[in-house]
Amino acid sequence: MTSVDSTPAHVTPSPLLQRPGAVEANGVDAGVAAHYGDPSREQRLLQEGLAVVDLSNRGVVQITGPDRLSWLHSMTTQQLTALAPHHSTESLVLSPKGHVEHALHLVDDGTTTWLSVEPGTAGALVAWLDSMRFMLRVEVSDVSDSYAVLGEPIAAESTQDELQTKGTIAWLDPWPTIGEGAVAYSSVDPHPGVDRAWRELIVPRADLANAVGDRPLAGQWAAEAERVAAWRPRLAFETDHRTIPHEVDWMRTAVHMQKGCYRGQETIARVHNLGRPPRRLAFVHLDGSGHVLPEAGAEVELESGGRAIGRLTSVVRHREDGPIGLALIKRSVPVDAPLVIGGVAAAQTVVVDA
Image (cartoon, rainbow, N blue to C red):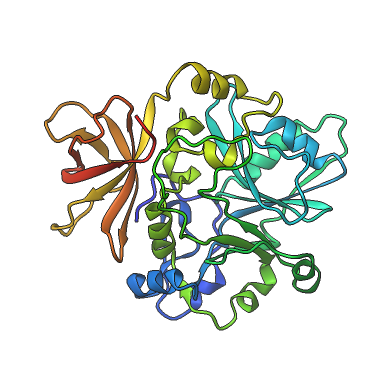
């Protein structure tokens, strides 16, 4: 699996890279293991709910103060004012034109809001949040040096007891549940993501190895294969400087359509009510008869020839489905059109309805 992003600056290699067989990932996921010698077995262990994934290169941000939730509510896409302790949600920071800038995996413990964010983005997010504090009673801290993230195939919220006894809190991925006030841009039912249990466990960095315990480790390749098969968008891969949430079906988990004004809301409302997103996410099966797959970022073309109609955003090898990926293509592309990606034939499955 190849990232379209460059390696984040100042990456500190995870201590779990010292485990037998560990091979470090590159690009945006540098600093943690791509695999531990057997990606197919690692993916099977994830599917069976047995393995854990090192995500300690992700950023962790803490927000404290009595105004924290109402403040975040006023600036991001999700309804947050009544967020209950230990209830996970997802929210986006948009540009004034509605383009996705940050994806926030968000959970509050009653006194602190915890954010898990993409590797290398915590500093920029904290700087922007600090610039928006004004006179409100909030404090923002990048605590990535003190806390680390683990990925677990577990469908459970954390509890107050876990926070008090272990110092850990979990963010449960809401994907693909259509949240309150949300709307889906895919009509597929059942959604392929319903069987993927996933949460991120935020632990004190010094306790990373203890939090893993004797569980087997799975690498990023295995975790990304499960994500892609679930059609789950990821900021580091499925977005560029002009991505809007509608294009990747992020409206189902990260956007509340009935909340008040926030940056980028005009684009959200206008596209939903009056127009259609200019691009759509598609799931692709790639011809695996060759030894080489296209890299993420490769141009997508119609098999019949012509100019590029999109780009491959993610590509993985799935233990059951073979070579698969996600691609962001023009909405006007026929839904049954055969594609060619980086010289490799590909068949598309509609994610976001045309």
